[in-house]
Image (cartoon, rainbow, N blue to C red; front, top):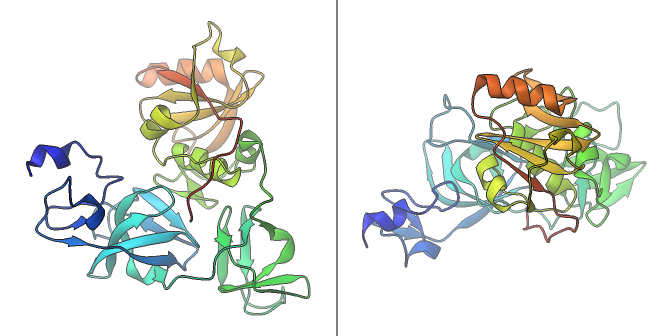
Length: 296
C-alpha cells in the first residue's frame, strides 16, 4: 500500500509506526509486521505518554490510574500502545502497567483520594488515585472501601452511575491547580486536559487535544457580537487553546499565562490573547446529554 494512506491518518489516534502497526489497521496501513493488542492497566497514580521511548521528552498526554492501555510492543522499559478511553497513541513507562484489574464500579469524586494499606487514616499512604480515576470496590470496612490498589476513604468515591452533571462546576474545583503541558490529573493539567477530564467525569466523551475537541466536541455556535454573552458551557477555541465559558462574562481555563487554572473575565482575556497571537477562532457548546464513555 502507498505511504500516502498512512500519512492521512492521525498518528495520535492510529497505532502505526514504520516497523509495526495494529492488526486492526492491516487493510489501510502497510507495515512490515502487525500485532494484536495486549490490554494492560495503569497501576500508578498517573503515567506520562510520550512520542518516543525517551524519559527526557515532555508529555503528550497522561494516563491516570485504572485506564486500560492496549500494548503492541515493549522495549527499553517502555510499552508502545494506545489508550482505550480516548485512543491516544504513545509510549508509556512499562513499570506503570500491570494486568487487568476487576471491572471498575466507582470513580474518584474529589481532586484526589489517598490509598492506604489498611482501613486507617494513620497508615502510611501507598499513593493516591486522582480525580476521575475508576476503580473496583471489593468490600467496605470501617468507613473505607477496599480496592485492588488499596483502601480508600469511602466518601472520596462514588458509584459510576452517580456522576456530576455540570462540567463547568467541576472545572471550578481545579482553580489554582498548576498548568502542566500534557497533564490531566489534579496535580497538573493543560487546557484540553482540563476539558477532557471534567467532561469525562460528567459522562461526556471528549477527545484529548484542543484541535480534536474543536472538530468533535459538542455543537457549533454562532459567534456572538459580544463574547461576554456566551452561555455557560460554551467552549472557546484559539489555535492550540481552549477555555470554558462560565456564563456572566467569565471563563475558566488552564493557561500558561498564569501557569495554573484560573477564572477571568472573557473580554480582557480575549484582548490579551490577541496581542500574543491569533484571536478567537470558533465557539462550540457542550452537549446537554451524556454519551456512553468507552471503558477506561
